Image (cartoon, rainbow, N blue to C red):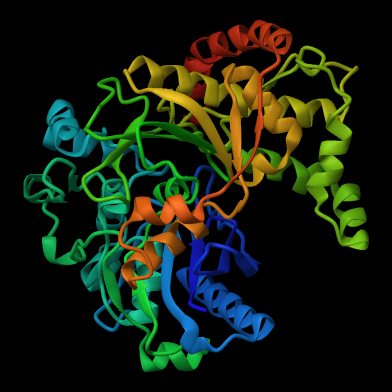
Length: 506
């Protein structure tokens, strides 16, 4: 039997999953780590923590599965997008990675827009200069930490750093590169025009390959550190959302998925470049050659629920630990009896500012309508509803761009909650479909790896064989009507609070 590994370098942890050639999950392992928040709105992590988590999870899998490591033919890596990793000539990390949810680069984004021109920037890379993207982070380091910038030999994205640690090779691929503000989405290469105008040496950026390309074999050093065979190849992989799309079978027209992880994303397949000129959603490359995706991003989706759980649900966490259960099971149990609308409580999920659809790094989280009747389960349900209202806004926007969405596939931690899934179906007024294998990004890059090492001929063929549907939840009409009353209030709240958010940030 042949096997492949899927590694997902996430914001809250690294998950590694072993699959057989039929797509069956054999065993998985996860190691969590924390955000480093030195200032309000900043978010960093130590890339070494990702590497340590990768080594630990691989070691756990090899030991628990007891398979012959020579039977692991390929590895695929998915990763949180946009993060800035800077290394010197020896491949040593020069500073903490600045992450996708970091909002410090407002001034740098203005500089990029002025130098390139807003319309021209969108023509080249399909997106405006945003604080979450990589280009602004590069300029911030150059301005504020010139000693670091001077030492920089290569700029990498999170997953590409881990692939470098495994193979010794630098490289990236279009699905991740297209989230940097430096990539020409039409010509599939780094934009010389943008780099020249920003005075960034193209040699700082890694070469670009296809997501399914072989990125190199496991080095002898990495073999010693992980236990993997030097005969195992590592494919180029994909950004986490493109990987999740492959892992849920979003590889043809009419298909889209919603994932509720740390962020909340709607990802819709497109066979051509389609751009929202108001830049409320993003256009990126897909992991399948010569295809694209329109994608929204709510920065604090599952993060909102995790933040509340970690700060106000200590009893649920303690009981869950004692019973060896997931604390979210107890949260769902407490939420299930709370009525739609959470007794007139509405949540805005802007803990880290917001990207889609409002593009405002100054926005912050709000509970609106809080009264003495509410307990923590009202607040938890309001969080779920508020995150889903944000997805609804993006869903309507994507449809209005002319993109067909016939069914909504769901993945991520939020998809494990039947309450949250029914909520999505009701608010979208659309069937939601879950996948038998819930590993999303890890399965997606395992599929890419299975193509790279020759188990399958192409991604579509592999998805047909490996992605299996689990169940479908249909919307309840009367629930939709109830939700829309609160959704209309939700839509009106940000425009009212926009100026107040800005004043608060000064």
